[in-house]
Image 1 (tube, chains in turn brown, green):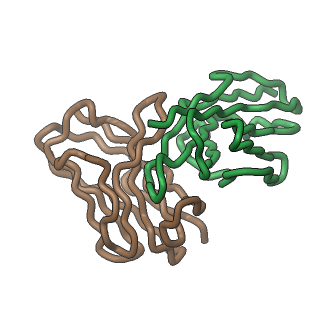
Image 2 (spheres, one colour; image 1 turned 90 degrees about the vertical axis):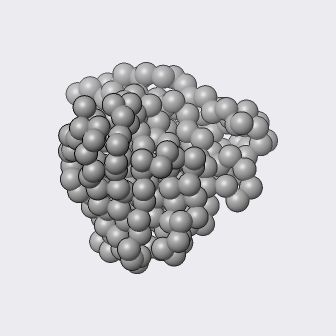
Length: 114
Length: 110
């Protein structure tokens, strides 16, 4: 099973809402990633978890709060977002977080902030 | 920071044709990856190719690190090859920060 699942597929939220994105993998991978992709742009790395610990935070605003409850699950908590945060949010996983490992991506959550 | 340029930005092919996509980077790197994103947004890691040549079915990639470029070859293209192809390099030693190029949008028509 090389599948990474993400829920929900689509999300519309207001600027005062709190919502969460969920990502799950059952490949035994110990590294998980969040990327943000604006329309017609390449993905941008947001966070990296390695062995359930946050190892990379690419200067992401605090209105995005990641959480890794266990090695299979990665959440992204959203609060007080801005319309410019509307984007495709991609989750990925890899074996252990070593550079150059194959990353397996989920289908993404399309977020619209009104 | 490292600059990554991809060419061409757009490419339209007849099914069955071959193509070459290019990725130039501004500094010495020892880590380069190619990705494919289909029209529905699914991103797939195609190759990790810091140097040399790798092949996977109809796709192959070559990186000449000393000359700061990488090529992705697609042979006998199929409509399922459509989408955007990104190359990405790691910004520095031990860094997870991937610097992506802007991508090449490939459309394969029947």
